Image (cartoon, rainbow, N blue to C red; front, side, top):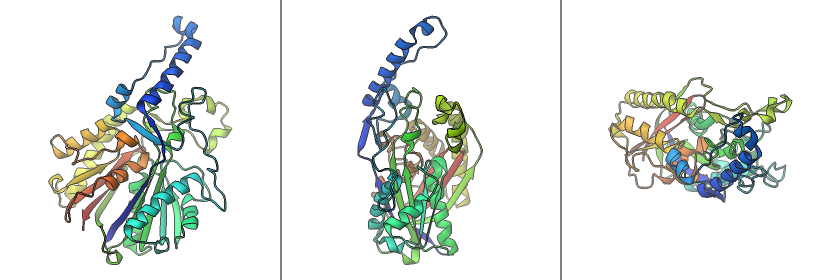
Length: 376
C-alpha cells in the first residue's frame, strides 16, 4: 500500500473574542438577578442560591483565558445569554452557509500550504462535533463552492471528529479510493453551551481547521508529515451528553430543560477517560515498536489544561514541558474536535526532519483517535 503524507493545514479563527473577565461580568449579573428574583424561595430554603464565578476560577479549573465565537454580543446580553444567529448563516445556492464558509477559509490556507488547488482534491470529509443542518451535506456544499472533484461527505464524532476524519482520509488514500483528501472541521460548539451554568459556561469556543493529505509519491517538495500509523477506540458513556436534536421540537418540555445543552460529569470524565487515553497511546506506541522517548511532541485534544498535563505526565513519566504537549486552549478554549489540529498547526515549525509526533484527540462517546506522524 502507498504511504500518506500531510502536506498542509489551515485554521480559521472567528474575529469575535470573549475574555474570561467579559464572560464572568455577564454571568455574575445573571446570578445577581436570579438570586434577587428568587430571594423568598432562597431564604426559605426551597432553592439554593447561585454562586458567582471569577476569571481566576475559570483559568485555574481549565487553563482557558479567552475564546473566539461566531457571536459574543448575545452571550454577554443578560436577557439572552446565547450567541446571535449571524446574518445569512443559512447560505443558499449563491453563497455558502456559516460552517461551510468557516471550513473554506481554513481549507484555502491548507491548500496554499500544500501547494495545491481545489481541483487537485478528489475527496472532502467534513467532520465536526456539531453541524448546523443535516442536509445537504456540508462537505458537498464546500465541494461545490470551493471547486473540488470527486466526492464529499459528512461525519460527526464529538471531540474526536478531526482525528477520526483524518483516519478515514488516510484509509481512503491507502485503499486507492482517493489520491488527495481535504479534511475540514468547522466547529461551532458555542451554540450548544448553557451560559447560565457555572461549571460549563466558559469551556467552548468556535474555530475551523483543515488538513490536506495525499499519496506520498504525489506530494510536492514542501513540508510534509508522513502518517506512520493510526488508531481509534470507542466506548459508550453518557458522561458527556446532549439530548438536543430532531426530537427536541416535538418534546413538550424540551426547551425548559438543561439537558438540551452540553452536559458533562466532569469528574467522572477525568477519572474514566484519562486512563483509557494513556493506555491507548501506550499500546499504539508499543504496537509501532516505539517508546514515548521516540516522540518529540504530542498534539493533544485541548479540553482542559489539567487533563492534558495529567495525560502527558503519565505517558512521559515526568513533568511535561510546553514543548512536549503544546497548549492552545488558553486563547481558543475547548474547540471540540479541532484542538489537536490547531495545536499541530501552530506548534510544529521548530521540529526537524525525522522527528516523530502524535496527534491525539479524545472526548464524548467515549472516543479516542490518534495518528503517529514523522516529519519528512
